[in-house]
Amino acid sequence: MTAGFNNATEFGRVALVVGGDSPERDVSIAGGKSIAEALTRMGIEHIVVDGAPALFKEIECGEISRVFNLMHGPGGEDGSLTGALNLYKIPVTGSNVLGSALTMDKVRSKQLWKSVGIPTTDFILTAADRDDSEEIFQAFNLPIFVKPVDQGSSLGISKVTSAGQLSDAIQLAARYSHTVMVEPGIEGREYFAGIIGDECLPLIAVEPANDFYDYEAKYESDKTIYFCPCGLPEDKEEELQQLAQKAFHVLGANGWGRVDFILDAFGMPWFLEVNTIPGMTDHSLIPQAAAEAGTGFDRLVWRILETSIRVAQR
Image (cartoon, rainbow, N blue to C red; front, side):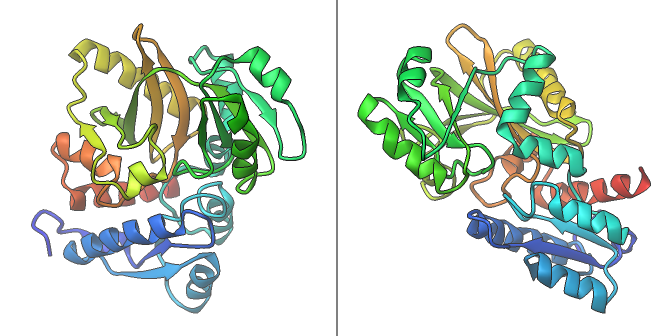
């Protein structure tokens, strides 16, 4: 057992749920492997299950005290699993049902942010069976981004730099969601704010290996460069951390998560999305930011698991 983790029995028997059938399955399984190893080192009794059906079979057949939810995307991150576990009265890590559902929906997230003055870009909604190109090009200059409204890990996202690329970009996004969002491209560096409980971790800035921080740059490339410390003046970083926390909580998110935004050439932040179940692979951002704050991976896993205790007490 790792030194400093002497109350491992307080969590009871933990079910770590990974995988599922979302497009982010492989990322979930990879992160789950690292978390399971940490749980073992800390002496926390646990099992690893693949997907919700396997989880509920274990709940019905055995004793599960709480759930560590690492299923990214629809079915795991959208509040569905959390709601079902609430009916079973089993504590689970991460955000509540409302926060999970709102953050998964990029449209509702932006609408709420705009209503409270958190800066985020305008957008146009379209679909594969519609031709909204004239409206899109009248509203936005190139480059633009095309993305599904309810996916993570940059799946289905395209950066469009010429008019001829728009149709293919919409078709790609529509493979992941019926509703497709088009946004103007913001020139600047992308930043990420990890949040655990009431603490915002040090910001991370990214210089992606590709044209933007896509799936390959996030999980497969060794050429993406991460900056933590992020290089901003201390007062500017604190200001952005506070704004990121506001962006997180106004959507009803709680427990732990990550807020993504771009800082443009004028120092203006533009908020992109909130992830309520961020990645936990060796390329992931939350573990890097936690390490900068002096929190090792095992302690990070412990702190995330502790959020399920707070959920159970609400």
